[in-house]
Length: 584
Image (cartoon, rainbow, N blue to C red):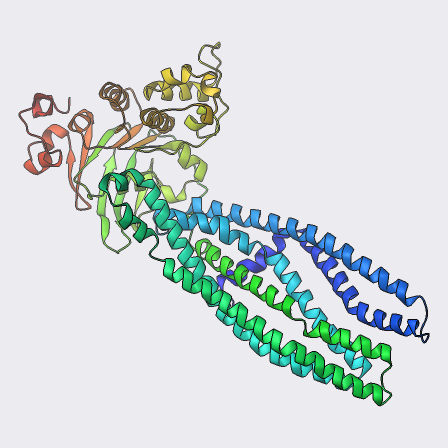
């Protein structure tokens, strides 16, 4: 039964385009020349003995030149086809990974994903070369059988018997090597994933003094890696040993049968020379072993790439948003974790257009998950999320991303220039603020987002302002967070902030908080926060506890509940946290 990996390999063969066809043509031509060479050399021997045409030595030289030419062109075509196939596979895999639900991608360590994208995609990209060379590797054996059959049928029978013995050994090699290669790549991916995690937490590991323990954790799969690697080499060594033992005996058997045929007058000396050459060509399955080894690695890489491609990606609909101001509705939303337990459980929440909604709750209450489903960073397992009456699942990708903006604690900045980072690379970079104003709504919105995020002063000090390349704009953690916040503020209808001001100083945070919570902002704002002041400034507060919506109302009203106050770990004696100053 064909696996996902086998189906991927069949698709990938076509990715090499005309170069794979060229490789196949040159390989076939070269194989044909190699099959003809022993017969022509035999005739050249007879010509030297004066029993054949004297032009056969010239023909032999021509075949040698043809073999050299096909090898050269085949190397060029094979390398180009492999590069094109690998590029297509990597592009396809990367697009698929970025389209996955974040929960699906999170099941795989980052290092393992990188290994599959860089290493295993390259292994699978060799499929065109492997298939062509695998087919042409069989031609010498098949051609030798036919040639010996034409010369003298006992020679062909002898060769077939020996090749059947070799085939039994090669079948065992494929089985053993496939299991070893798959296990090797899996263990390698686990080590890469753990190393990536360790590098991200290098400062914490150093501060805790747990470097030796972390090294042991990262390298824990190493014994399995060593065992699978040794298994691969052991299978290859056994296959080579079987070939080394059987091939010479097979050639000797052909020579013996051929000598008996010469004595019987059925073969000439030149034909015996050709028979010996065909026996060596047919029994020389070292090329077949190498090709099978490459096929094993190619298939193992394809299986790991196909496993990721089999993960269902997030689908988008064709719908566009109607006129509206960002009414957000969560209807019976449930999200389950990897263990099947609900992270959010039956959330029913309606946020009026233009409302600033603070989402609060203890650690693990589901705040970040609610923020994620609100803008479809992940889909709920049950229930529906609607924006201005349209289910998010039905929205077109571009419409959704124009409407919803996210600000995170540690944003990833995407784009070549500062303007592209803020505008999500979707609008032309604006002219610097000092240039004469132009009637460009996108530029006006971009500059307004930069001002609201308090990043405009930093950008204006850069050599080329908003046209400055991101790589040429070194920035602190707080500046990067503000730039990510400006990108979120560029959205049109819904702004989702998940602890997006944690790296800012108090004054800057206060300025941004006022801009975000300002009633002049017509967008709906969903703000995940741990701060009393932010909750007090919001229009409404959604209080989550254990994945459920425990309370919804104004901060000053919820403040009467001691459990709500405990969320902030605050005491009501502080004036700015008191009900009298809240919710105004």
